[in-house]
Length: 429
Image (tube, rainbow, N blue to C red; front, side, top):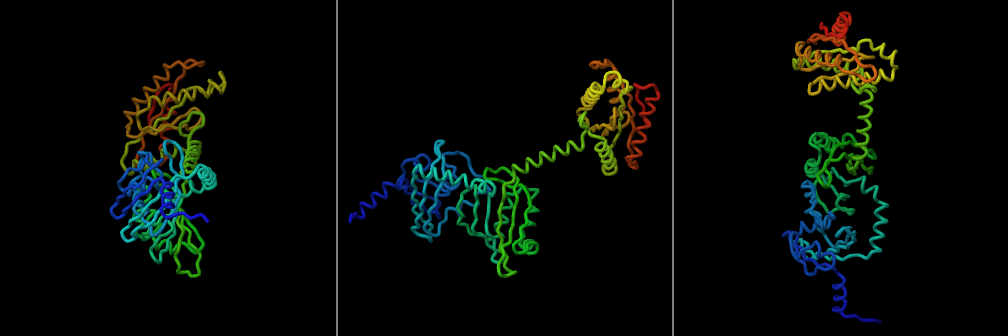
């Protein structure tokens, strides 16, 4: 039998530990008895214990970045240990990934004094961790936060913030207190909804055993940026209907939400815009006219209407073909949009070669000047292939008692007068 003395064993252990720290969580301080290897690059001889925990737990050593202030609420409790503790941490030093082991041994539990031992694990451990990371990557990226809630005792437990650590946090807080802390991380416009849906009375009244519900909102991530998340509550099924225990999870849906919003925006554009010219289609400009009448009644806002019609457009199609006709329509609309830029004027294709403009904050005299400027510009413009062309313009004002139909009838009559007067002119009604 090989016999070693206590001093020999202690020497072997001490030599194989890379960092030995004596900590006082109560005084927020630590002192290093030994620092070697990679730890000498980011751990000082002494300093703030809170700052040390932030470096280790948030995996931000060798970095100047800081966690957002709202997440600071987790730091104090993360550095408190009720007994011996062991955890593995993934860190990055000088661009190279490392796996370190942290062992915590209480010296005086009542005072929060510990000895923390740190040592670097070998490369094979890192490789195993990489394999494991790949297996759990989807879960870690998807669920940012989880915890267990007991409403009867107003408590939470088994808190896990995957952005911070894969381990559950030793965190003791009342559920009622947690709600008021976490609400500051919610987008201001979503805070009222969050407080309503997470209210204990609401959960008790609306969630039966084994059932779940969720709602989407924006919430700060570790860096302080708002992202879209799904907040999920699931009630556990126990032997008593008066047992109000829940699992709460925060799911990261940001990328999927942005993709969905982009797709919805595309469909919205397709549904409300003319595919050829890009301006509002008939239905959307009609809605705009309805909205304008509402603005008149609510805010007494001045609204006028313009309607453009390309003179003898059928002749252009018959002579040069519909492809040229389409190009002329696009160029015509582009000219109108250019002349109306800077004004609150919405333009839409009413049909064929007719275009309607809803003009906010313009009286008849003002809009007549703009219409005349456009008419003259079109009549003097040289268009590719066809050379020149003209347009007729009808104008009308909108009153408080108008309906969409009544306002458009007057506008249509004004355009008819312009065309009946020889075209290439303006008329109002």
